[in-house]
Image 1 (cartoon, rainbow over the protein chains, first blue to last red):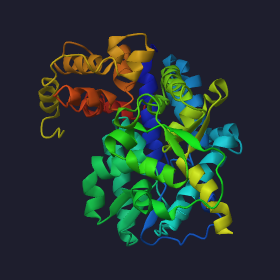
Image 2: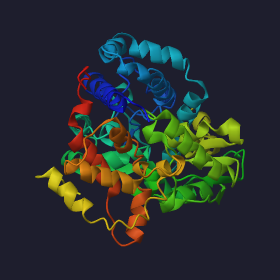
Image 3: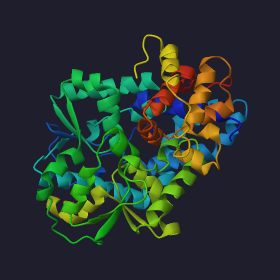
Length: 335
Length: 112
């Protein structure tokens, strides 16, 4: 165990909170990075229902690098003055350093982009046709809440609720389970008070699954479904995932520990416990690999963490959004 | 679980519902990969929280590690529910983080 765990957690939490509350972004980025996926799709700006990404998929390439950076220097935090130096470094060069390390984002950025485009294509096929706030879309504050920093999380979520209200958005469709659980179950009064109804996209896609007839053949006929902990146990979304996969013509293979009894990918502790996180994700990836090589996930955090074991175990991790994109031709549909 | 108006008492009331059956230990992913370190299990964490709240323990690096390495995956809660208690273990841990370490989210200083 780290001998300076308190400093590591404190550094991570204070950085996250300062970034979120001062720039509106957990990474502290000022330059917009969360709208590229929507390029060329012609989504209406704003309007209700509104697609809310919460920036979770888009930050994957940067979050991975930020966690790597944080873990690399956590031993230095024991040195006097180092935390202030790191805070200063983060303020002055955090964004440029993380962006440089992430480069163009690599394959995970492409997957995230494709997942969001697929989710949009699915919603459109289901007749939802959401708008999008583009660069005005704020971050939710979910990571602060998950680490126990509720005052900061509440402040950010209140800003979000106020923005939806000010734009007359009464119906919001979110794409990741963490954001939905945080806004709908942990601080329900904020969105309810703003008159906003929040859904996860699978809650809208599953009842309209018959409208998701694939236009293109998928590169596999069966997938091993990894249920996200938050999706299955917090939101109770289990069958919806399977019905959407079946609508795409996929046979669902169930791994050991599935549905309500699913096992974690390790992602939530990556920010400060890299080794433990890697061991947990490897444990789960091995369980999945024992059933099949094509794995389907429905959460950006699971996508990032499980995909790290792809070459080692001969796996390919697909986000359901990616499969929707391939099957429904999100890019072609936009053209 | 609502912690107001007395978060400490609310946490202790919840913790007292635990019958110490320990069925939740084996399903905890961090316990599984730690080679059986009970402090990194759901049951171990709630015992640590109980002793932190009652003043038997002080929040040091090792206990912070145990408290903050919880994945919040709620697998333990499934087991607890199956055994008839249905404690919101992850909620307890999350609320304990907020109550026991409110300064962690503040600006880091050398005094931390």
